[in-house]
Image 1 (cartoon, helix red, strand yellow):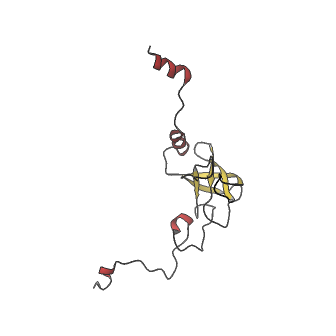
Image 2: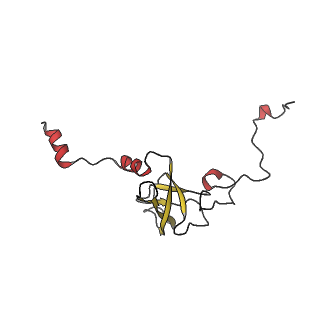
Image 3: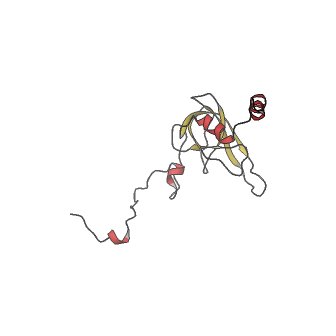
Length: 141
């Protein structure tokens, strides 16, 4: 047996973090989880803030993950159901998931006008769809 194969068998080379993250989500874009703990974390050196983070238990594989909560406002309580997707917070160490708002028990934000899909904000009543200038004068009969 070659020296390299022997080394691999005896030392067991560690897999990359990406493979570990993919295993948590089981190759799915989102997974349902249960909030077990909610806490506040401070970011790494150049930044300073209080960021809300949840520890959630994924239903499918019973693995605990730490996910950040986007936006300001209502926070999930313990034993709330949440939808978790990938997406890390650069300045929060160990946080590699994000909670999706306005799904299951986690309310959305209603004060947002832009980036509404991220914060789970419904379309306003007076919302007009953007039409390109060259098509504005055309009326379809």
